[in-house]
Image (cartoon, rainbow, N blue to C red; front, side, top):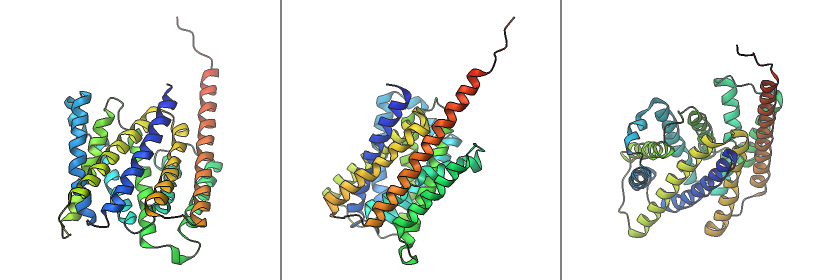
Length: 301
């Protein structure tokens, strides 16, 4: 498989993993407080991650978890998880996931403002259109702009920063090490929240759900990191939108939630804007490659 094909497949698997973990956490948060749920799930996730690190033969690279760039990426991952899960406990899954789809557009804007990457007016317009789509999802009037919807939007911003930080990590750092650092960061965030909560007993059915969620969050972190490091972002990013499909199916099947017309319309606007942005990025890269190939090469003597 080509790098782009591997990246696309990894992104599709990551979105399925995140859908599973989100559904499990939605059920868990009906019983457990947020910090406790994140902490206990994190213990299982760290255990699974260490087994995967040992199985992959990457134990000698454990120190890379403390690498400055890895720490930045996973700090953003932990903050994004707090915001997302806090919103998840109080919002329909499909609606929250649809808001999160603005994240690739935010990443485009961040790349232009922070990394000085060239972004033309068309992609800026697509980004603005994507934000309009988010407003449609949240609600046309101010009554739809709740604290939980804003938490979901904050999670999208943090996830965009995480994706940019992932691209800046050296290629020799194993992806499973990055995923391990991600689940450690989420667990630590949960432990901090947990100090302010009253913990409740955990039943065996809840442990099964926590293990399922732990595998999902670990798999999602691994495959999304693999996707962002494998193919071109412009090719791989649109496959992120499969999360909307998975989340909608799960919401209907498990929670009997049917998204409203504004969620469908807004999600369509955001996805269309994201796909157009990826298309423009692909065109720009092809133009740069063609220009580089057409330059006369100096003859070596």
